[in-house]
Length: 95
Image (cartoon, rainbow, N blue to C red; front, top):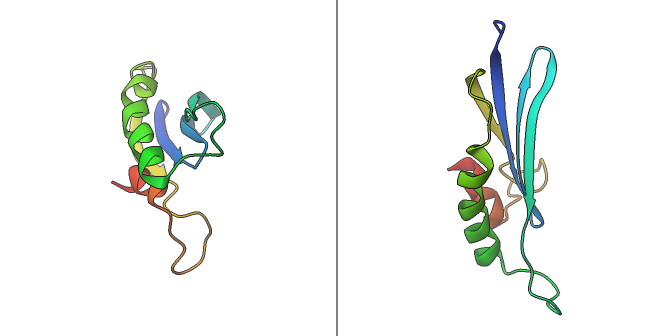
């Protein structure tokens, strides 16, 4: 990595949309937004969580510092590091 080069990290869990920029110096920037659950509800359906992630990304990324060059992107793509592990919310980061 050259000075100013960063990796954009994306995590789309069942609870939070998270983004971060990491350089050779360490964490440069991060932003996250919790997913909205209606009062009294016990959680979100996967389709609703995925939709919220897609809606959250533009607002999170518009505040990303422009002076850093993104040279790679890393994203969570499954809930566990096992073959066949799958949840729809992780599709947002892999697409």
